[in-house]
Length: 483
Image (cartoon, rainbow, N blue to C red; front, side, top):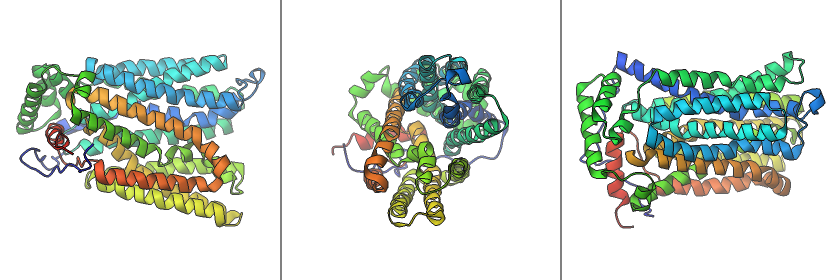
């Protein structure tokens, strides 16, 4: 792979988008489309966060309303969703290219409901694992399809902020799960309260289905199927400028003429520059997960109790994780429309490296006590600020931008599936590393993130301010050049 970063400043090959247009009926419609689509992200966030509060009740004996989980089955129940998400990302990528982003999301809303109802009614561990796997398929499918759908509906000037709403909905879903878990546990005397916790995730799933019935198909997907009249009709609903409509139609027609009928994996295997983009996408998934984000989201109470903090205080701090993540993501949405993707990633990774190293130093060398606990919590919250403000929103945005139109679903699904595998590896390896290496584990994360910083600096292209079609043409030119 070429180590040169593609220079996207050539105005002859990449059209410069107009300044952000004023608020219009069309822009409000696109915003509503984004809200409808991100119900999938809200379900994604809630389903990944709710398990932390449900597990203690699911571990009760069956006679007491639980499922009798032990440490092994707790891990299986938790990880089954992640492995389902990897498969769901792959499947949804292919389905969204074949049947469309909107149709795929409509189907995923039904898969969400099957997984939710099955989990709520699960009579045994085996059924729960199977239902969590199905739920994971919906989570993974939504994670790869929602950003693509929004990016293809949004104009160049709105794409960054609208796609970044996906990340805001994910962290909002996680925060909602943490808060509702705490409230239900406090106010309910039922040992089966975990079933109510899980049942709430049906709400965003239903809203996703209703929303998809009320929005049009992606104009880019319609154009990729040579349904140009339908693509124009959709653009007329979501663009306020005739000039912008003609520009986008011309770009889509030009790409269709170049790409012919080649699509799917045949286009990937036969096209070196597309393979390079796929490897960049997979590398970005590694970067996002090996920041250690899920080590903190899943194991913050364990980390804090190791400093001497009480269990109840540690659980309350988990809600703090969710609050900081939501605030940081809102700031990130504001920043992402004003700054390039690479500078944001590199700044975020620099902050992640510093906070991981600081946390390792606090845990290794500060004496046990309240000050040590607060210092560790401060490091974790600073880490989350860097991660959720500067890295996570940019990752999901790049997943919607990098890949060519005719294989966008397949490649996004594949790259996001790999991200879910990396997620599972971090969740599996972190407690083992913590038991074997102790606090030095965080220095290992810092070293990995130094490598990720070099990867971003040398290989990740800048996509800020470019139309999807213009970006595709330029990446083809740059990545097809000899190494």
